[in-house]
Length: 395
Image (tube, rainbow, N blue to C red; front, side):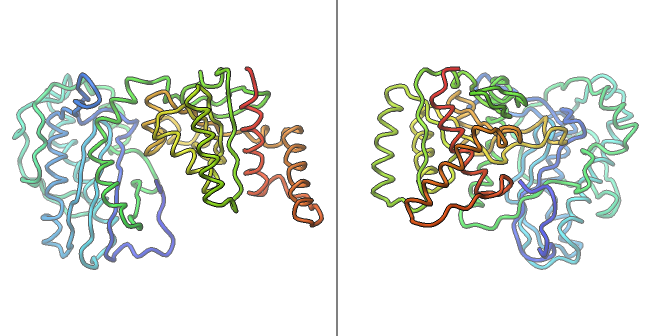
């Protein structure tokens, strides 16, 4: 997900966006997650959460009167953040950012005027869904009117946890939203088929949150994982490192379809017999094999060049793998490993990369030329060498 604006992009023009807006400190200000399983998981919104949901649903209608042609395609109010997929139908008077900032300002204003000082807020945020429906005036920069209508939340009233702690945070900040120079996290939809995946992702959020909250060890970011004499940042099922049998997958970018299918058959056969597969999943052949293993539920260790937030990054605490990697991780079938800088500079890894480069040079009848350890080619080759070492390591 992109957290900063795209250079050269016209934010007034026609487009589809996915915005994510986290609450300050990821405090569960809007409600709680309930359900006995991932399939029955649902977010039970409190009074403020329902209010935010109605504001989302009425966003397009509110801004229509200001000359903005918008359509809300999907929305989800989670306990500690909000998702919005919105379409710009016609060029806007201002950038789409003005709409998002207006919505955020409106939510903060509603919280301040109707929930922050209220008696029930000192203990619980609760009440009738219609409570606090008085109109709040303002413009897109400072807040906008309460909007009725919009899709039904389908959630019953529940009493949320006491937000006394958040009230103290709000007193110091004056905004309910996470402090971020970008104001929000965005993704612009570019590719065919991306819209359906994005809407499905938004709707699937309660199930994914249930899986993550009930499998915390599988989604914990480990900064110093030692394996095969190397150090990694990792997330997933670390027991896979202790598996007795391992195989590594490395395929040339020039491999033919026949070569890829032949390698796929042998890898799947070994996986069926209990072998863990290690791969950097760089070339198309490697990616196909990794995808096939994942789809069939076989254990997989993927080495990443740059996959995790940097240490100390504000999103480090809430990171989770995306898409299909999330599903495999939640089932204990996946381990993601990103080598540290020391691992890339390890003398034995460096030597193995050089030897591999020499062999390729000899096979193709050209002279060997060393490559910088900082180059992308070196790092990709180093990942493959690490996969080989891990696959044959007993510890």
